[in-house]
Amino acid sequence: MRLSHCSFVVPDLDAAVQFFTSRLGFSILSEEGPISDAGDRINRQYGMPDKAIGRSTLLELSGQRIELREWEVYGQGLNPLRESTVPGCCIAIQVSDLGHTMEQLKQIPRMRMLEVNHEQGFVYCFTPFGVQLLLLKEQGWGV
Image (tube, rainbow, N blue to C red):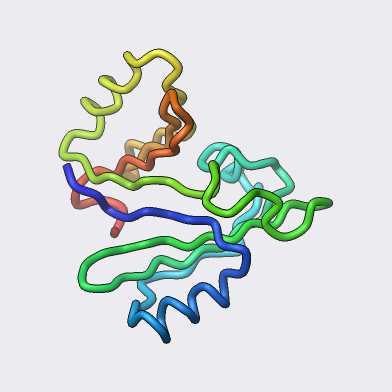
């Protein structure tokens, strides 16, 4: 098992990406968005309201990765959540046996599974104490 990346909500994605790339030397690995409720993904993966729109950027420095995410919720404005709060951030962990890890986690009281996608090799879930995890099958998901 190894840490893949950590994800954080930021109030202004463009400004945050500019800061990390120009001031700290990170490079952009990928960008996504805007993503919305098409196919119920916003709710399945992030637990966000159906009217949410998000975008994100995955950055890397010396093999270490962070994801920065910005949310907008219709009627509530840009980033109605406090920065760095659930579902604003997650810990992404690569695991060698996704099915076995998931079965172990299901035994934990109050563990909440969001989206399970064996085909693409990922699982979104919340721990009993409210931290969102993204479990990634090793050699999967391109991260």
